[in-house]
Image 1: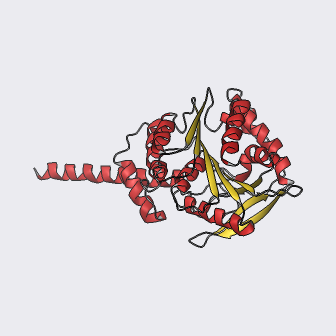
Image 2 (image 1 turned 90 degrees about the vertical axis):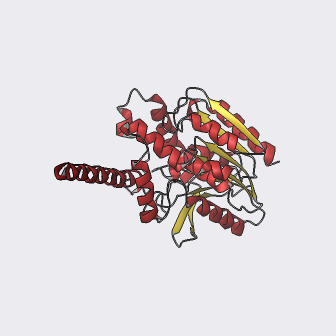
Length: 324
């Protein structure tokens, strides 16, 4: 009997240690900074050698090529502006302002997970060439911005309210569009539920997740073939202790239920990184004015490259409706 109790105790300790180890690995794997998390100004933003070898990945090769071309255009027009976050971090953004034609329209263009402001150069150039002023913030822990971890939009949504106020300081007559892709889209959706200044007119999200928990649950199953319980529960508690937020705190769906600004929802139906099923969950959560665009055969964050004519015609049509 005593031996059986010891054996059961040893098994319990082993499983507890395995769960804790898995939780620590997951938090570090998903949220801790890594090489390349922060963006540094570079003349060599061009298609990577790694992507050149991936003949089976034409969408991402095309995207990298177009980003390289667009960034060269964009950087000629940009300067770096700063602001302090609500918790004291110095956040930085690229700012491309219209010089010849005065404009009070501003696109706040928000990058994704372990990405950087210049990765959204094609989208920024599109708005800039349409006569918009463009702000590309580095999310905390990304770009030139301070921060020691990736927060998945949980705190960044409050940063975006700060950037909106920063724009209004620059131009009290500003009319602001929120635009984000991937984690940037989730940040946009979470921002939409915050108390926004009336200068924020509308928002566009492209392939954002429904919540941090939902995204990690999906990736845990997709990448590691593991169930969410109990590892994800333990990881969420660890994240709360270490970084100040749990995986339940960052919810696009909850924020969208409070959102009052019009929103365009975009997703590629071949997305297997943020699953296509999350589009409907997000769309249904938003009350009031909203539109939806599904881009056929587009993988994650590739919709604007797969069918640019459709993509930008719908983006421009939505924008024209609310920025008359």
